[in-house]
Each structure stands twice: as C-alpha cells, then as structure tokens.
Length: 320
Image (cartoon, rainbow, N blue to C red; front, side):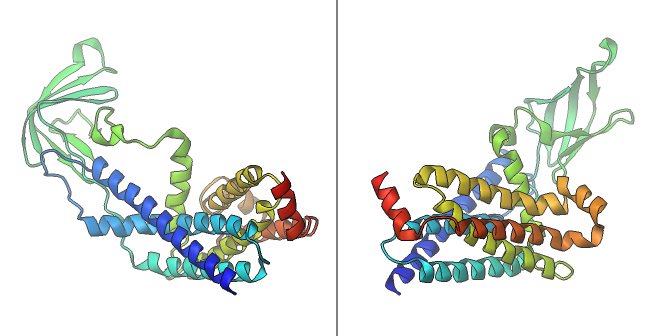
C-alpha cells in the first residue's frame, strides 16, 4: 500500500512538472510571437495565455507523466498490481477532468501582427518598407514585388492598414492584394518558429485539444477517446518491460505514445479519415479512434502473457 501511494505521489509530481514546463514554454512562445515594439497590436494578458497553454498541455503532460510512472513501477522492489491500479485510476481521473476543463477555456486569441515602420520587412515575394505609422495605419509604403515584371516591381502606396488578428496588410490600391505579414521571414515569430521535426507533433496536439473537449455534441466521443487513451497508456506496461534493456523499452514506449497522439487527429481530420469513410461510413468516425486505441491496447495486453514474471524480469535487468 505504501509503495502504491509513493508511486501515485511521483506520478502527480511528474504531471505537475510536465504541465508547468509545457505551459511555460507555450506562454513564452506566445509572448515572443505576439511581440510588437510599438505596442499597438492586439494585447493578450498573462492569465488567458496561461489558461490556453494549460489546455494544450494537459493531455500530453498526463500521458508523459504516466509513462514515467510506469517505468518507476517496473523498477520498484514490490509487486506492481496495486501500483498500476492506483496509477490507472489517477491518470484516468485527470484525463477525464481535462476533457471537461477544456470546455470552459475560451478559444485562444491569435497574436497580433504589426508592421514596424522604417524597417524593411521580407514577405516573399515582397519587400515592404513603411515610412510612418499611426495606430494600424501606415504610409507611404514602398512595395517591391520580385514576381512582377521589371517595370512594375517597385510601387509606392500612399497608405495601407494592418488588420492585426489575421495579420494582413491591406494596401490602398485596387490592383494590390493584401500581404500576409505572418509569413515575414525577418519577424519576431520567424525567429522562434518551431523546428520542422516538431511541426507535426504540434499540429496533432492542437487538434487533440479540440477533439478531446467535452462540449455538447462532442461529449461522448471525447470521453470515449480519453478513456481509450487511458487504457492504451496502461497497456504500455508491456513495452516498459518488453526487454531487459530499459533504453530500448523507453524508445518503444515513446513511439507508442506518439502513435496514440497521432491516431485521434488522423481518424477525425487526417489521413485515416478517408479510409474509414470508404470502408464504413462517416457515422463511425466519432468512435473509430477510440476503437483503434482499444484494439492496440488489447494487442499489447496479449503480448504481456508471453513476457517473464516481473521478479524474473527485474533480475534480468539487474544482471544486464
């Protein structure tokens, strides 16, 4: 009983730490990408930014903390049944609570975008230079379009206006389309752009926040997916003790967790959606991702039958 309680405390501590680290990085990224030296773009106070960051980080933080706790349970000196039961109950409660908490957090406010005066801003294929700024109005503006003909590459626009939320520079000329300042290559957001390797993960986490929000019309699918994630995380116990090399097991467990985070958005909005609609119909989509996670979890539980007893496995790890 004491070992299960210690394991539970460790899990809660890891959950808090993971949630704090992820939300802090998210808030910092939001402040940098929304930075406006003139202070005239849409301002978002600290508390809304923190709530939005917590809503994005909640489910991934619980999953990561649960995986760490499984490794702690595997190397513990006592039986793991009571510890696993306590962990499963704890992270299931946190995941389900997160689904309801996400429903009360408002949608995030996009960072405001501005055009610094007397600075050359590169927005391919354009170069934009604004002489003066009054609020969100600019003028005159020199525009260089590298994709235009030689005679029309340079133009001077008397005035333009920036809509800070979509980040569009609307020029006061009928023949000029709006320029998307969010794509500026020498802006503050460009300096802190996410690494390419994490772009897909960030997109999946963003979609996960929406798909796991327990709101009217989505409550049952969201709760089923959260429970399926909880069961799949428990099934990762098989991967934790798959071999006597902990690092090898950790790589498999992390890959499985990444797969779980990918499955739900892929079924609802991504590459698996079309396949499922073709094989069945669109009515299965709200529950298909939960069913896939449950099937994968059953497969992992089945593999567990062929693994050595826990005490023997611990002896192999100690000898290795």
